[in-house]
Length: 342
Image 1 (cartoon, rainbow, N blue to C red):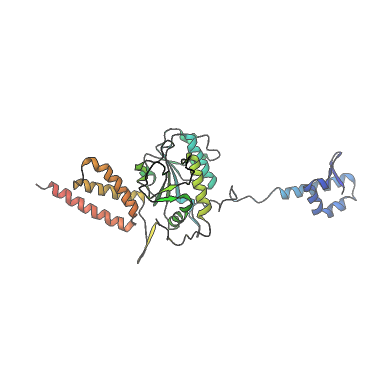
Image 2: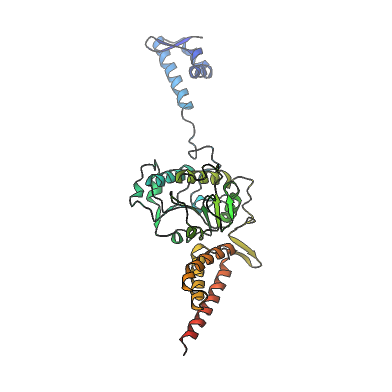
């Protein structure tokens, strides 16, 4: 096997360099012909041959997404047939205290193809400048900021709140992270929206926050350390959703899982009610109970809490919610009319 002397007196043994060996085998015809040329011309031919080879092996087709191990690349815009769009999922950070955790959550969202971030009443006013948001400043720039949880989840038809059950008794159904994907897939496949809530670093979501959720989402952890860092929790949940949502074994054409966003009826499919209309119905029911002197004034906050839980447990569709609104409006009207009469 000859040496290729391309630059001055530097010789490269072909058998000791795999790249040059491949080039030598691939272009052996050109190399054989070049041996009969003048020394200077031979060097130019070999240099041109190796340059073409290295250009071919160093320019692979670009990957469609950053992490080749993901189930599929992010799907911007409307979902394709048989695919789920990540634009239907909102990540909601409730009263976060450390901007670095907000940046870490934004970076995790960018890693897995999510872009819709909502921050509820952040502790630091300059949270959009978090340095931990490496190469994902656009997620923070486009993030929404709201004053309360109800405003943040207004458009969602399925709200999941992450929490640890170590020091609390759940009032909602509990879903473990590995088992939640079928419910989420059914919801998104029917055009619903998911809001994924993460609580503040010091104590997590409060009872009032969880009252606005349909289920509690639990990340399996070891008993000695049940809680996770905010950024880590976001990364784990989004990774699980990304790798499982678009697997072939998840049937997204049938809304058979609990909490599906639609209901099949004799005249078509009726969508579930979003959080904004559930809040409207709960407020009207609370006003009706107050007008009827249902309970003392000290119990009104507890009654509203129970109403929020009840409506999300019933999870009525749009048609049923409209009927309930009409019913409570008529009752409230009659109660106020009777109270004005002498």
